[in-house]
Length: 363
Image (cartoon, rainbow, N blue to C red):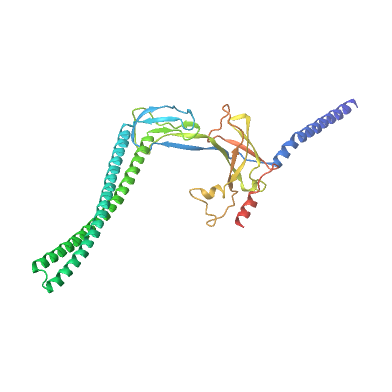
């Protein structure tokens, strides 16, 4: 009887232990189940960043390199210096050409002013000559009448007639000179317009020369780190368009999470996202949903799937979701492009209904 009681007692203890374990398991699982029901997670997510290829915009020999591999740089920091003697000389040459063109324009404008003064004098001379013709004509008429009455000699009349002819010739000559001067002024104005175009061209060439000179100094376009430095050493000749290295922009880092299409129903722009980084298991980043790609990732691939051909097998698509980082940059746990992360979207957090926005814009 004692043996039976012992067996029953052991079974009871085992059952109690199992019940306790089940209760503990349930208690332990409830938060996880609750979390799973209110969050959407994926391990198909990676860190992305703006990677800026730093290329040369002029030809020349590298004189100085002020950064090394994987170095921190600040926006506007001088990184590389290319020899600039030829570009300085080109700027001086363009300046001299522009000055010469401007001097030529001043000469043309001076010639126009002189010709205008000559034209004004010629017009005044024409008025005087017309007045003399008028007087000479009256004198010639008077002498003709006197000659008819034989009160003056033929020679006196001939002198009056000659004076009239000379005055008429002066008028004709002055008119011809006025036309010639006006034509010369028109030609000078055309030359002036042409010269102004030349000056604009020379000024543009000077500006381009200055731009090329400024491009001999290469500055960092953003705060970040240098990457993929390719033998950028003093003395090396580089051609326009050569990529020296890249800058990883630390001010523009985000996570691209490829969620299944079946996970998107309750996800909204602005919802809070917990980001666990594989490289830093004891550190958590926080962010929010920034945007959804307007289409599944496969649609934008080099060879998109043709679902209307062949035997159809339904495959769950993944849609890239951009997660913007809210946690400040941590030098002890930096996010680099390509790192694997696990983002979890809090579906209970308040977000913006991007579908409502989409339909509102269409209406």
